[in-house]
Amino acid sequence: MKRNYQQIDQLERYKLRLDLARRLLGNRHSISEPEFSTAMNEVFVVFSDSKEVLKEMERLYETLQIPGKPSTESVFTGFLKSICKVSGLSQKTLNDAYFIKIFNAKN
Image (tube, rainbow, N blue to C red; front, side, top):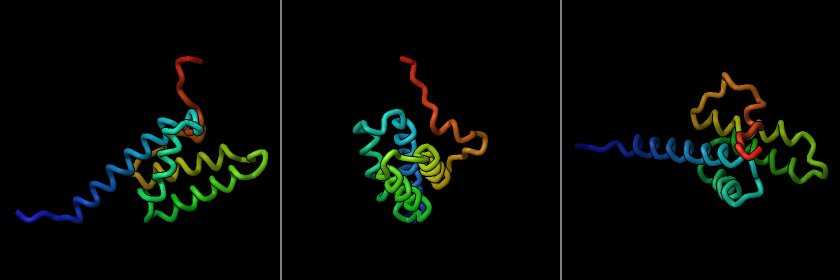
């Protein structure tokens, strides 16, 4: 039986992207925590072939360097939406507020 390595590589990339999207979205409640930082540091590797994600990541980094951090929410939302889109996760039924809202039973 002949294996199609290209299909295996595509499936692995898909799984990596889904896992990274899950970790970014799951840890977005505290971007200063190690889990979120680790996931962010993996973005440029896992999404190295996505100009859209890399552009949004650069835009986020630039925004975070500006004193007062204007429009951080919209830039962060754009970054997360690009991660979802390229990972194959549909966000059509969600408005932008869902990318900022977090569930925390402690509050």
